[in-house]
Image (spheres, helix red, strand yellow):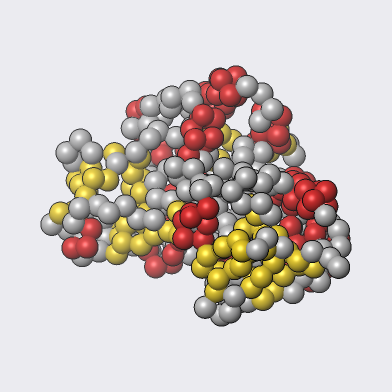
Length: 375
């Protein structure tokens, strides 16, 4: 009798794990609160592309079509995930929200309003970016303009002719700022709390930053910090005159600590130098229809898009098991088990320099090997 495995989440990580485990002979059930696979990718902003080159982004057992190009667009990622599920004959139990995981009598109980599920093993693949977070800025509830999280942004059409502030200098904030300018916003500001490190998307033809990241992740952290800082300095201009001094040479340290990845430049640098994206200091609050900035200044945008990150959404699900770190991330991943939770695995909760899709594929294979050994 094969062991039963429950996978929570039908994004790329959950699908990859399901494919590998099915191939290894496990009885797999995959559930998701949505009604489609890859629901998060369906909701991302339209101009998004994978930041990893196609050759390093395949999930196990089914490659991304060559016709999708080197940098796969969001819509084609969705098509790929649909095709991946069909290819591996993965059936989704949709509309099922797992609220809590408990271990009883050597098995896992997945608590759900739609009915509890029982399994020998559980894989949590609910995604790195789960619950949108907007800081509780003073006065934000009285702001007369539009204030939305970046997860609600699709394209620039609603902002044509409007003055817009984007808060946050991760890749999402950077790309949305570019999209707004190209889409016809009349003025675009970008609020910067920590000066980001910029890197070029390609280091050479057919070689993306993620390709370099595959090598760099095996080197000592201080050395990787120095390499990234040197590469950034050599390939990107000094933006000090535009309010962005050279960043601290600790990009890899920050990525490991809080997931702050370098910005893959898709046009933001040129727009900043052309004055089409204006950088301002961090947002401290809202008052009298204005946005207050660190250092005492203020601006009056018509709309604010908060690219201010996400919560991993694991506290209610597994927080009682004692295996999350201070930032709510699991302290084990891939084929690793925590002593407090045997038979429980996590995928998709790291943000590696070598690329998320590649890491999800590696996690899936590691989990399948670990479960095979544990039989």
